[in-house]
Length: 193
Image 1 (cartoon, rainbow, N blue to C red):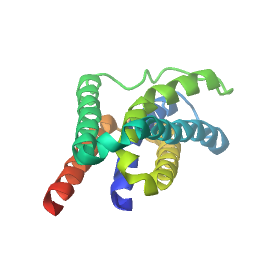
Image 2 (image 1 turned 90 degrees about the vertical axis):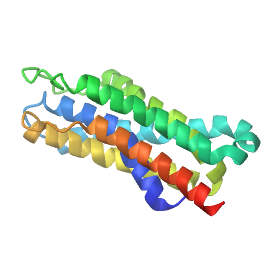
Image 3 (image 1 turned 135 degrees about the horizontal axis):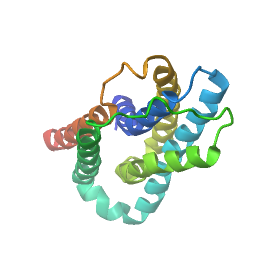
């Protein structure tokens, strides 16, 4: 698996977290970089650890997966992407946040951890696609964590600064990216066979 594919997988997996951070940013009055970095770090940490757990769980099935790895990657990314598209279309009709809300100055880490865990469940399943690519798994989880951190930090900033004016459905875009990567992995394997 090449670095560009890993990068786009990282982007696709980060879209849920980005959307959540942007909607939470809409509830703040001013941007505080240290606060945003702490929240983004928690999201990035969960987004990086969950694929590693999925990878570790998938190692037990590595001999079986090796013969159908391209179909497994295609199916997992297709299911996750389809779920994200469904959620994006379903939730796209609602406002992402009640912009009259106020968040306390103190970070509610229990809430941040709960949101981070919820948005990283898909990354757990995505970890299975790295089983045949053991040589890039640590590069992949590092890239996923960094990309998620950057997206979440930017999401908080954009939510505070422009949140009421942005009407882009990032979850839908993330789903489309994951499906495209699944098709690319399947296509590359079938064309090389």
